[in-house]
Image (cartoon, rainbow, N blue to C red; front, side, top):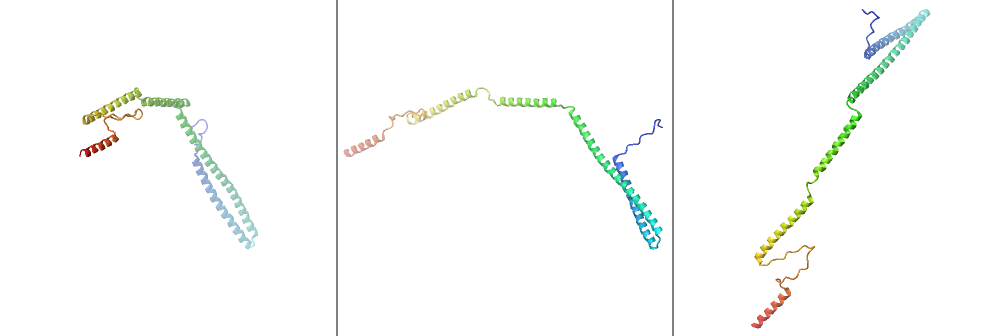
Length: 222
């Protein structure tokens, strides 16, 4: 037993309120239809009484018809008010659901941002950039050759020329064994000097003259 006043009534959900209002609207609609039928019946009865010259009875029928129509107008006004309440509750319920969704979204975002701030984001982005710079420096360092590559290339070029000269010497020695003479290697076009006629190679004009002279001596000997 409560000592101070009665207990507050339980809260009614929007869905229950809308359901109750719609049921009431349906009841009022049925009441209107019933009264309309009653009003139409009174009109029929008034015509019947007029046909029998009962004007007093016809007048009473019209008065009851007027009362029914008055009740119909009041019911229509009440039904319109209930329909407006239904639309208002539905709109308010939609607004409430939207507000609850936005409030829940705000709470979720607040929970997410508890462990994240603008300064932390800036620090993280700076750290990422720093690590990217370190990675670029490492890649550059790895791609650089070890030692003096140009000095090594000069040494290799000199070694290659020595091998070429050795191979050329071997070929000249082989030709000398076969022919008994040493051929003169051709010099490069950049350092080539005018070649002197080789003593071992005869002039083609002199050979022809000597051949003609030998032939003439042979004919004279005959």
